[in-house]
Length: 208
Image (cartoon, rainbow, N blue to C red; front, side):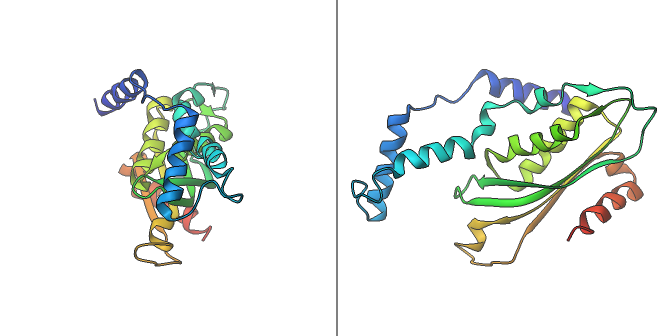
């Protein structure tokens, strides 16, 4: 039931996209922010900054234009009965927090135990990137990655662990450099079986 609700929520979002302003409006907003910061957007060093920032935002938030469920559609069934854990370790990503739009830089460990079919490992990394390239909080991103893999591949279980540094905490506000946040989402056998869960946690911690 929860899986069906999540699918309906994704469909609703896809059917009601946010109306995007045109490029000129975006660049004008950036000029306003530069003036608000106390500088002159017309001076030589800043004249091209609105265009640069707009292009950077297109890259930072490209995940909104991609559907992670489509990435996982192509699978392979000739796996000779393989039914052990598959783990993609230390997938590096860059994201931005939805509260301050400050960078979140971290790594993800993505694991699943297949049930008759597997997916190319690059597709797992792309799912991480699609969700990372949106405005995020780490807890939600962790759940989104795990839930999507679980819903599409229908494996025996999924485990996702994310470790990341949040610049909204290290370069502003609390100013606590050297800290990171660790989140996890365990589904299926990773939630129900303590030994399976511990095996994944051990693999993630061995990379520290």
